[in-house]
Structure formats: C-alpha cells, structure tokens
Length: 528
Image (cartoon, rainbow, N blue to C red; front, side, top):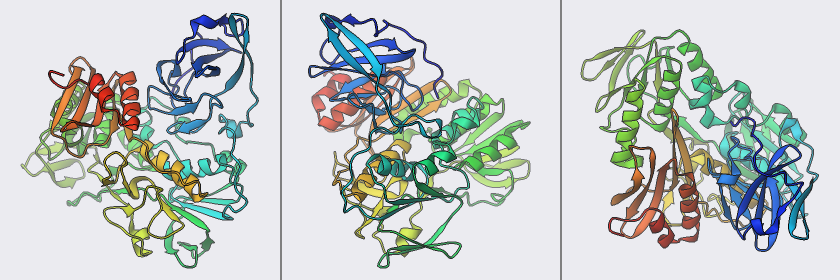
C-alpha cells in the first residue's frame, strides 16, 4: 500500500504551456492539493489523479495505451476520460478534473463530481445502463479475487437486481497477495488487508454471505443448496471457488504448529505462532513458500526451506532467475534443503527423507494448490483439470460461468486451454464474467500478469509460458536490472523483469497487439 504522495511539478490550476504537452505525452503536476496527471491523447487533454488506487503506484511512470493509462507497479488500468478502473488489480476510480485551453496555456479547473465514496473508499466510477431484460437475481459462489471483482463490476455495469456473494471465509474479501507479503512481514496493518469495509457491500446492495458453504448446484432448477439447508435461487451463476492448498501427506502434518496460508485467519495464526519463535521450516519453494520465508525473516525468525527441486521457481522463471532468487534469500539468512522432502513432523522438529532433523517451532506448507472443482463436478459441468469455459468464461451449462483459479479457458494468444493461478488474472476474469452475465458478449483476451515480492526485489511477469526453448536476457540479473523473454521458435511467450516496470508494461501492450517485432526490441535475441 502506498503512503502519501509528495506534490511535485507545476500547479496546474495556474496553467502550463500547451506546447509543453506533446501528443501521447504526460505531465505530472498538482491541483487542489492532489497529484494530477495531464495527458494529451488524440488531440484531447485529460487530467486525472496521478496515484493508482491499488497500492499507490505513480501513474506518471506508467504507460498510456489508447484512451487509458496503466500503473507501472501492478498494471492496473484507468480510463483517461472518466478515471474508471478498467483493469484490476485496482477496483476504485481515480479522480478527474476539467481542463480548459486559455490562449497558449492549459489550465486545470475544478474536480468533477463523482459518486459518493462508499465506506470511505474511492468511487467505482460511472455506471453503464443495463438492458431491461437483465436477469433478476445473480449469485456468485466464492468471495476471493474473481468473485469480489465480479460483484463490483456488476454494480459498475449498472446492474440493479438482486446480487448475492457467497463466501466460505468468515472475513470480508481480502487482498490475498498481502497475506504472504507485507501483512505477514509485519509492515502493513490489518486494516489494509480487506478489499472493502463491510459497509461497502450493504451500501452497494451486495448481499454478502460470510462463512457460508454451498453443498450442491441445481442446474435445471436454477438454485443452490447451502450447507445450512437453505436454498438460494439464481438466474445467472458465477463459480469462483478458487483453489485449496495441497495437504502434506506425512505423519505429524495434522499437528497444531503446521500451517497453510490461504485465508486471513491462516495468516493471523502464523503471525501468532511466529511471535517468539526461533526457527521455522517452510515446505515448498513455491512463490507463496518463498514469500512466507521472506516475511518470517522480517520477523527475525530463522527459516529453513525444504523442496524437491534443485532450483527454486525454475519451472516458472528458468534457471538464471531461480539461482538469483535462491541467492537473494540466502543473503537474508534462509537455508535451503533442495532435492529433499519431509518424511515426518514432530512437535519441535521436522525429519527429512535423508534422515536430517531440523528444529521447528512452526511449519508452513506451500506445495501448491488444487482447483476447488468438486461443486462443479457434482453438478455435471465439464471438468478437465479445471472447470472448462469458453472465451466468454461460460461453462458447459448455459447461464453458469466460472472464473479464477478453477477456470480452464482458451488463452487467446496461443489458443491452448490453460488454467492460471494468479490474483490479477482471477480479478480480470471475474470482471469479464460479470459483463457476460449481463449479455455483454466480452471475450477474455487479457494478457496474464503476476508479481512476486522477495524482500525489496519485485519480479513482474507478463504472458504465459508453460515451456520454452530459450530465455533471452536484456540487462543484468545479478544487478537487479533486467528483462527476460521466454521464447519458443520465433515467438515470445512471456517476459519477466526486475526493476524494469516500463518494459513490463510495453511487453504487455505488445502482446495484446501480437507485435513480435516490438517484443524483440524490448528483449533482443542473441545477435538480433
């Protein structure tokens, strides 16, 4: 989460020279005590808030694409014309100001009126009109990234009918990436973790059923059977049930000091166990496992990581970045036990298959997740390593959609059916599914994006590469200034970067255009 933004640049209410703002250029200034970004696009000049509503990223360092500006940190996308948050992870709009040309000067006038700020949050943005034939009752099962984003998008799209969001967790929807990063590390307060305050849902007419499980879907009768025996009717249904952590199948895995991290409650329990702990064992060198390791080191807990692979994250990031991540953690005192596995857990320790024993006051398991498809499978929906959906995210049953970790969808650049477990992908799928529940006929063609934070080093990744033939590198991985292109033949599948935020944004935009030439300029192949 970002702090207060220091005001820089000119006072835009006093005006700036029209000639100082070229076509497609941006100019950072301030008005009304707030940072404001001036943008000239296709002859028009726009003035919008310069701070991303997600984590406070600087939009002035972002990228203008069409009628939008994108945040350099996590690729949130805002409309230049309305300030609306068009692409997650930002869910709230930025403010807009009117601009007037007076002779050779551009002068920013007053801030435009926006909807009241519900629950103390920035507004969602202007709603769109909805057809009179809109369904009367919409239900979303799952209150994670996809489900929460879908509920908000439905209201932003102007849907005024009954809307219910059903969640298994007792807490309001939370910013899950923060659970393994700043909140777990103790550098972010808990009030940053909820995506919205509880009052937000009531004020937007979203019925939020917390701590509620769904037992079955009645496809023909258009209803849900809840665990308490109640029946909930729906006209359109979105399944966003997410994924469940893979359980560690060893003796002692059920002990009270063994934890999995998926919910806010899980995170609270890990924090409590870490208080006064001397040493932790993290099982699994996954993204979540290593982020947990970094957060526990921030709490001065000694950390040992046990994993079967020879390099952490090599399957996703390749050998060079995998070695870099390992060295980064080792610099901070993390001890790796690679090509190893846990054979048993005892009250004060962990035994490895090699026979080595590690002391452990707490154990955190991060060995992957499985999509929660049981509900869909029981209802007879088509399931194949996830719930199968079309390009509109509709399942094999008309009127039932799926989004997030459970959705197996056609990736538009390759045409392959894939399932991607990334927070931003889940949010954006929820937004597209919401539009299609209102018959908007929107195809999900978003380029996948995720980020991972290891101490003070962020890794950004756009695209999707399950395998590749080579990795081309621009810059220096060791110097933490690089971009890596994962390629198969002449095609760039994905780009990972460290401290090259603008390159990451440009790569995303190039992938949207299928512009391989631009991708090769960003990360040139050897001799190219």
